[in-house]
Length: 124
Image 1 (spheres, one colour):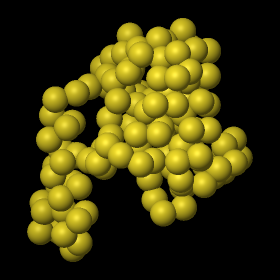
Image 2 (spheres, one colour; image 1 turned 135 degrees about the horizontal axis):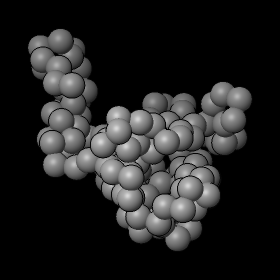
Image 3 (tube, rainbow, N blue to C red; image 1 turned 135 degrees about the vertical axis):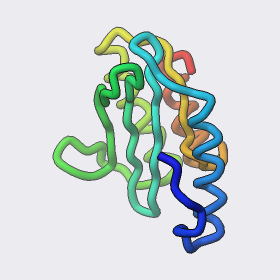
Image 4 (cartoon, rainbow, N blue to C red; image 1 turned 120 degrees about the horizontal axis):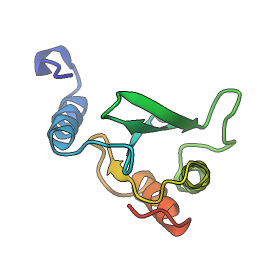
């Protein structure tokens, strides 16, 4: 998983990668508390729910594709994606998760997504 920092050209991407790796050293998901991993771009949001013990992705929610939540990569879109993630987690009888912000700072879209998951009854 570790990438050499010399390969990453952008300074901001290098800092985010360093933060991401330090976060992933400390957290992992299991069957009772899966890890919710977030990736964002300027146009889309991707959320994966992962069981790290079995190295298995339980499901994913994104803002593009066939089963997409019709939203943009802003706070309003993050609230819709968070509600969809919480609905899917309740369908699988999961009430607690581990939140992996993937090196992004906890504000704006990332914070809105986490708050939306909390508001829909999942313990983060």
